[in-house]
Image (cartoon, rainbow, N blue to C red; front, side):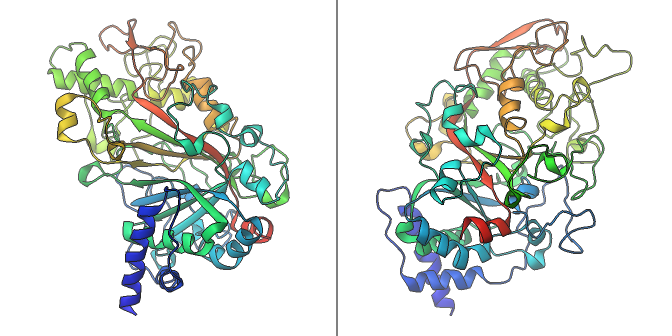
Length: 512
């Protein structure tokens, strides 16, 4: 038996190397059988990574419905788990044979789709967590033609590129140019080799029923950088709380479940009954120009009395993000990092941009009006729980090389050195969630409204169609000054909008 399982791992590696080419050599049925057997095994270690500073979710759920009524055994796990995965593979595909795809999905693949309840306990966690979502084109291909009540989803992300601030789509991955991506498999585990086994299983099961359009491997960064995105900041701190799932921590935004889950309390849109407990998934492959970003900080940081030049650069970065790299909020710690606070979810969200003795319409001494975390969750500036999203992304690509550090430029010659964020956000309405946050807040230099100066663009994710942007409040000694941001350090490589259905909807509607 052990040799058969080893054979599955070796075959999986072969399939993974072939994905993305014109043809994919199908694995043998022995390899597929071995993969299926291994994926059915028991897990003894946690599939999720414990990252200090991120919200600790429940680890045990007493029953399938939970005390507040959320059917956690029917909700796909990635929607609620967030950014705690060790390794994650995204496999984007188109469907060639809908009838055969449905049959295999219903009988062979659906049993492996992982629920939120399964992920809450090591004893029920799978070897590889598997989730699945479909684009509008994918649902139409499968003859699922109900109107899901989301026009942004219906049109797709390619049609939304200009609205999102992208400077055209020349930099987009070919798979995302148009509507050829019908769906995405999300595979997560603590081992890349095990993810490869799941990929072999899927490719071997579906064979010519699908065409793999694009794959992207994400992974938690090594050592002390675990949980930090590629620029170096702890990420995923300010997730909303759905009390039916997780009790709120101090400062955490409390939202109705229907802000994230279709058809639940707080979702005002009429949907088909089968769509309940699904969620719209916004995916973006965001390339990060890490050497260039840190070069800008070093070159542009104003001198601050008592700080060295590197410390001044760290301060500028913190004011652009709204947090120190540790996750500590500059609103509470405007001049120096407090790593212990960044690692403590009881403290790292406990602020709201308002301070006694300071006018919130003029005060940027604590946090700039256009800092990334203020643009995307304005707190006391504007209480807007309906505009919340549940983020579930993961970094991708290698660490910065020594050659890149010396040159100060990302390596343009080798796509394997591309790095960034596989951005994933879940919401019940894209027009109030991701699309709104990007277009109406991050990209809008006039938001947050009602200030004494024009705030400027979100300096991290804000986009202006490739044109320069501006940031106010960058200099803690003179917050009336504006800083021009001549380049985008985050570049869109494209993406798509998907619907992540409930597990029962996959089995009884989509796959029949």
